[in-house]
Structures are given as C-alpha cells and as structure tokens.
Amino acid sequence: MWIALAVLLMAIMLGAAGQICLKFGLGKLDSQAAFVVITAMFRDWYVLAGFIAYGVSSLMYLFVLSRLDVSYAYPFVAINYVFVTFLAWLILKESVPTLRLVGLAIICIGVVVLSTSYRGHQPDSGGSLGTSAIERPVNQE
Image (spheres, rainbow, N blue to C red):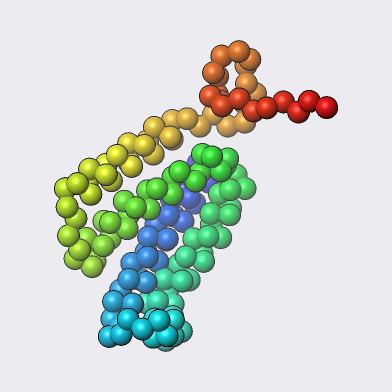
C-alpha cells in the first residue's frame, strides 16, 4: 500500500507540474486564437512538457489503480489543487486570497480524513458499519 501511495503522490505532483508548464507556455502567446493555441503544443517546449507530464502522471495513476480501490485513491487527486495553487503562487507569482487558502485547508482536512479510512480488502463483519458504510446489493437469482 505504501508504494502505491508514494506513486500516487508522485503522479499528483507531476500532474501539478504539468499544469504549471501548460500555463507558462500558453502565457507566452500573443494571440488567443484557437489555431495559435493548438499549434503551440507542437512548438513550445513548456506546453509539450506539460502534456508529457500529464501522460506520465496518468500512467503512474494506472499503476496506483491496480493496487488500491478507486474509491480510496481518486479523492487523493484533490491534493492536486493544493500543489497547483502553491506552484502558481511560487512560480507564476499569482496572488492567493485568504478565502482560497481556507478552501485548500478544507481539502487537506478532507484528504487526511479519507486517508484514515483505508482498511484494505477485509470482509465485512456483519450487521455493524464495519469497514464499509455503504451496503452492496446482493445478487438474487
């Protein structure tokens, strides 16, 4: 599980770096015309690096999905908002208002709560809530 979580964290950070690369590369364009933006992905190294980062991040996420439940792994992707905002503030010099910081703190709290829910693939013990608060329907044939 720890390896999968480490790979998930690396995938999230790589995705955030890709977002910053895309913004930086497209921010250098003089035109907002769709054709110019589309052709920039083939000519600008930052845009290309952003797409490559997203691709590698997606491959890493596939590895994670092969090891963890999607209902556990996917909500961790919300940490991407925190990383992107921090990198935008640090690298792109974007301002981050207080209300946005409050929202990011709520995201972090949610991910911490989520991380405590992992129990692996243990069978449910019966009538109590146990490891799963959501009951799955039983196939009745």
